[in-house]
Length: 112
Image (cartoon, rainbow, N blue to C red):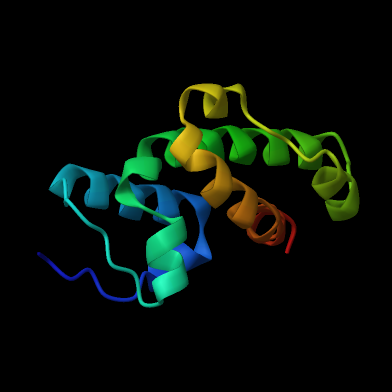
């Protein structure tokens, strides 16, 4: 199984994360082993398609909130749950664990 190493680029931008997730999905691993057991348990590769779709939707909502002049706190308070999660149950927990930090990174990246 290939080792992709630390996703330093993915950690810096939403697009980098999306690209890294797409690479992993294209490799079609049977098991995805993260650097920590809790991540391996909570972010299985089966969750990636739904998680990727949900995070893309969240990026869109976050960008719209920024454009509308919402503060970071106001965007976080939206507690956005993308409709795509209804069809991707495995992605619900990873999405909820990721949501606030993802919003904060997108907000920081677009507002400075």
